[in-house]
Image (cartoon, rainbow, N blue to C red; front, side, top):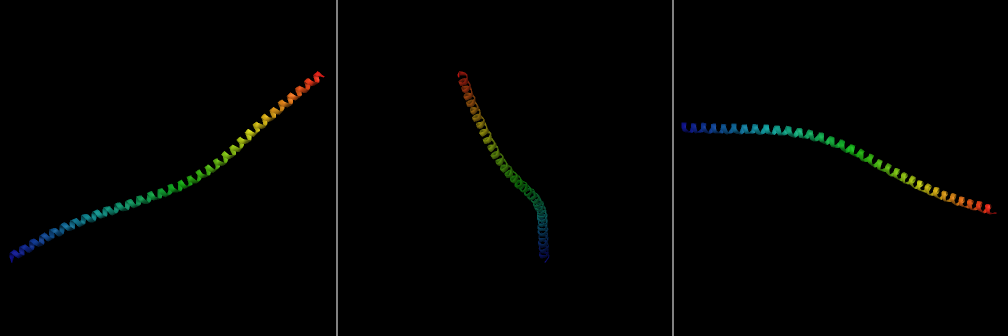
Length: 120
């Protein structure tokens, strides 16, 4: 029985060693899982911060796009107004040239009339 007893003790010691090894592995895995869990939490917090920043950028971008649209409309209106003033300036220039031609015609007729009167 002593051989059986020694074999049983040996078996128990091997099982205890194996159990201790498995316990150590389990502890290491638990620690690894805990570290990874903390990293995931940190990543989630970072993602929340990044998400908030992206939302703020989206709001600013929307506001900027609205301002750009308003400025484009204002620019279009000013360009149209500028085109209208340019057309008016050209018309006035044409009217001035027409008036100058009329003045020259009248002066020419006057000069002709004066010459005619001098001949008489």
